[in-house]
Image: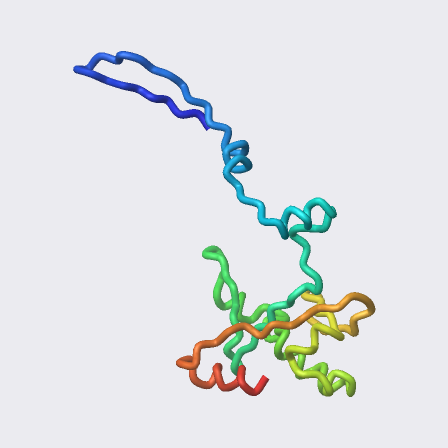
Length: 152
């Protein structure tokens, strides 16, 4: 980052100096490291690693799922697009119909045992690692959607 410092007096420039600011050095010089973070870094542990991963679980009332569109998209074509009705939530119900093990799990527990394949729009049994499901927040003023969340 470069800052030009111009001083003008009576329309005449008296001096111009260029100030070079090293933002990275400034950040590192002014940063406070606590004892916990210092030990964590000395032991070379990952700083930005999260385990287990957390999956956001959306839900919706019947025929009220969210559809994302671009300005250039045709609304009629987007609404009639194949697979538009299959969501994570609706496919959870289909999984419960087909798999007896899935019926024992709540919606929030499902990502621990099953993985969501977004391209295929289906749940499949998880073979390794674990995941935690988090049902998205809903304000009580939302009415039926809030009560649906309470049931999940």
